[in-house]
Length: 193
Image 1 (cartoon, rainbow, N blue to C red):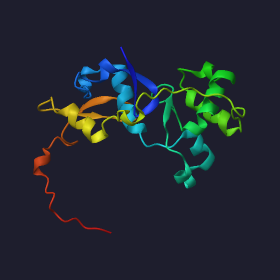
Image 2 (tube, rainbow, N blue to C red):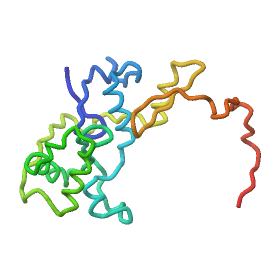
Image 3 (cartoon, helix red, strand yellow):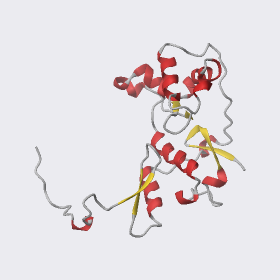
């Protein structure tokens, strides 16, 4: 069974679990729970800045951050990296005790603390050799709207919502008061400040 990265390098998925024979994404209901949560989380992580760049530049200079290309760790405790900072992460993980934090709730925080303290990989420290058989063909996970559409297309009378931060899927009412949304007057003008 072939493994493939989707959207970001790092997390690897069994192709047969994620794609149909036609190369389309499977329905979320047909994907194993752990894989489904990672796929949903990836839609949230796409386009986020590299954690290390963000720690260097901060919120005020966020535009100077490289976009993340790589994800390591578990969902909700993942570290996002650009290729420039991957060697720093790998050094921390392999040589500076980061491996001990793997799978813990403090994984991301421990890397951040190490990095903020000024630690870096030594000059010339080797990273990973990524094998991109066809980097231009790296599949992109569906955007959040598409995920919600696919999730709800098979259910009549109930709607499901995806929490992109946690990957949880819940059933929701049409609105919080229980009144149908069909009665809402969207053409009404409302006062402004």
